[in-house]
View (cartoon, rainbow, N blue to C red):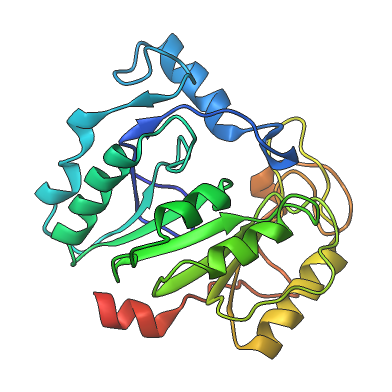
Length: 249
């Protein structure tokens, strides 16, 4: 486990590493590039590079941490990847249930498999379940799959935002994260796309979190992610589903 630089979490927990691409949001995957660097550095756990690998020796890591922590689960993979057995997912959720003082944020592009896993069960109250929504064709349909899951928190990670998403059905969604793509091949995110999502969140009373502009600024110019910053409409948007956080921690 390690402290995370991701703005909406605190620590990452990766009992699985590696993945395969399923949609346009995966094209310039940050986790793939990072896994290759870690493999080159002979970092334990990345001997297989970005090939899907189960790490059972990491399962007990959160049990050892007493301080209440928000964990992003599998930042270097996808929990609901087709090659991850449901039995191993069961083990991960067993740890989540044994540590109610932590909050676990789980994000997937495989919403259909997540819905299948939860068809006869409810997610632990300290597990937040989310789907990636990068465009209309691949991303938007995942929202309906997410709604089928009985979860205390359902969230959308709209990153990288690749186009105008149009009208979004935000019913039973509690939190929306929006961000532009970073890296040398970053695709541009238009300010009006973000504005549309923020306005819809406000109308639907859904928490809105603006993560970053990424490699393109609001002015349409390409520069470093740090230089573009996180300001949207002149402010930092760090909204969280507070009522759930207060109830969990």
